[in-house]
Image 1 (cartoon, rainbow, N blue to C red):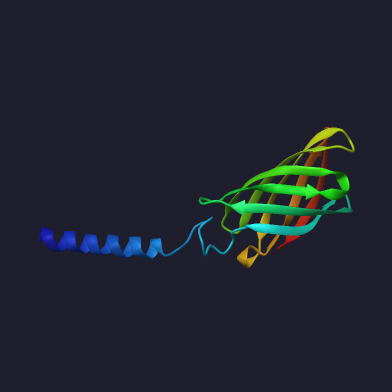
Image 2: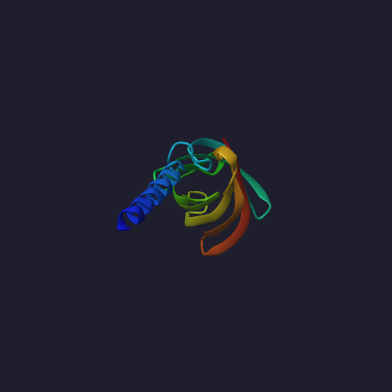
Length: 139
């Protein structure tokens, strides 16, 4: 009787692994919330709209790397983050040449289907001052 149990257990394991193998994860082709490519959009900080571009890539496992550019302020900064489900956590450390201060912008944004849009709240700290706002980008 131990042979049929082993066969049943093996069949269950095969079905389980086959089902799981067909679902792509973050950074894998076919994952619906990968954010890879060039995006344009804006930050709205303390009611002021600031145009920006975002060039990012989702690596296998969900890690996100890239760069954000805010031309009107002369800012180009590295972006680091993670895709988890349909959420994108980003951290942007930058230097603002206008104020002479370092800053950090952080968000947990929502990714639209196919990774076409990224939007959500943003918290910024610059020159020791905390500011709130939002961001919205489209590929």
